[in-house]
Each structure stands twice: as C-alpha cells, then as structure tokens.
View 1 (cartoon, rainbow, N blue to C red):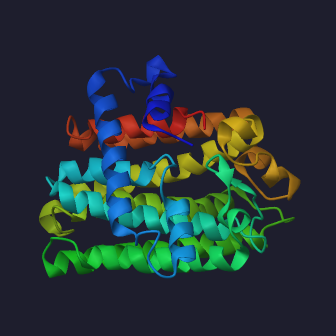
View 2 (view 1 turned 120 degrees about the vertical axis):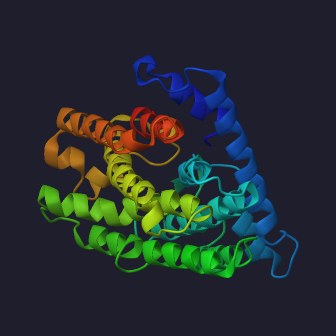
View 3 (view 1 turned 30 degrees about the vertical axis):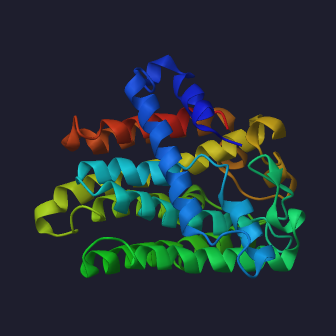
Length: 318
C-alpha cells in the first residue's frame, strides 16, 4: 500500500526535481491524504449496513491504500481557485471513487485478470466476481451522490457532475479501456497509443484538476487563463502518468509496485515501452514533465503545488 510516508520518500528520490525540498510539501501531502481517507470513510456506507457483505467489500476496495494522486491534484487546483476545503475534500473523494471502481472492474477476469492491487488481493479474489462488479457499480453511484450533496451552489454542483460523467464515460475512461482490450495482439502507432492513454488514464486526471478549480470558480471567460493552464498541464501529466506506469510494469518488481508486473508484455498489449523502448519512454516522460511545468508558467508562483505533483508523478518508483 502507498502511504503518506512512501509518497514523501518518492518525492525526495530525485533531488533535482525540487519535490519535497521543504517540509511544507510533505505536510500538505500528508494532510490531503488524511482528509481524503476521512472523506471516503464518511461517504461510504458503514460495513455493518445491510447488505453488509457488499459494504464491507466496498470499503475494502476504497480505503487504506493508493497514491490518491487525483485527490491531490483536485486539492492543488482548488487552492488556486480558493475553493472551500470541505468541498474539495468531498470532490476528491468522489473522483477517487470513480478511479477505484475502474480498478475493481479492470482487475476482473473478463478484463485484465489481476490478482493483486495496492499490495493486497483484488476484490474479486478477496470476495468474488459478482461482488466485485457490484462494488464498482456502487462506487459509481456513490461518487455522483457525493457531488450532489456538496456545500456549493446548484450550478456549481451540476458542473462538477457533468465534468466527472464526461471523464468516466464511453468517450473517455471507459472508451480507453475498450480500446485497450481490443488492442491486444495488435500494433498501434504512437498517436493511437497516446490517444488510448489520454482516454483511459488522462481523462480522470484532467477532470481532477478541473473539478478542483470548479469548486472555487466557474469555467467562464474571466477565468479562461486558469482553465487553459490546467488543461495543458493535465494533458501532459495524464499521459506522463501512463508512460511511467508502462516503465514501471517493465522494470519494477511486484512487491514494490503492489500489483503484478510484466502482465502487459505477457498479454501482448501495446505499451510505450514495447513501442518506443525503455530509454525513449523515459525521455518522453521527462519531456512531458517539462511540458507540464511550462503550462503552469502563467500561474507562477501559485502553481507550485501542481508543479511538485508533476515531478512526483514522473519520478515515482511505484
């Protein structure tokens, strides 16, 4: 499992990155992880609520693990827009519910067929396949219920629901997974591979940044510069995140990564590493990091947290 301490250790792994240079970033990461865990815990039904078997599995999937990159991005972008902390906490939790649901369903035998996630048995292994499907269904519903109850004006809540629904739908996250499954054994060009990654991984990362800002200010002409910067930034780090995932799948061990490594190669799935090679993939991740920092230049110094998160995403070790 990924903890606040391990995130901070990753942040310090490359001194040149500037991440973790002071205690402020460490404290901010630790506090955001704690608040996200609390928001998830109070949003999800208690484990003893009928049907208790389902709710126990729901909490097993969502609590106590994960890097929480999307809630961190939501919080950092929300800080730029001076969004209310309680709204950011709940919004980050809602985004994380969608992310966790996608992992639970991706791990199913009909999809990627994984037995390990976040250092523990996947939901269909710990419980059963039917329960895993229902856990994913319930997490989707709970995410939108959580957004509907935010302490924000109605038009802002509708904008957040719309943003998350678009990111999670067939033209983005789910569509990216469909392309991924249908690409097994096929050669993809780099543009097609990057498009798949932008849909499957990048869409929810982009939504996390935009939704953090939407908790504070609407996406209207007076705020156009902020949203342009966030869109350019999240496009870069969304792709970078998946490039690094492909690198780690090819180079890390299962104990470090918390999930089974080498499965993409074994399943003959197209990845950045299989297409470009390891060193070119590392170079691409570095270039995307620089692109993310360049996108934040108009926001300096207010975009510092987002810059630190870009460094963390690219330099992470698991």
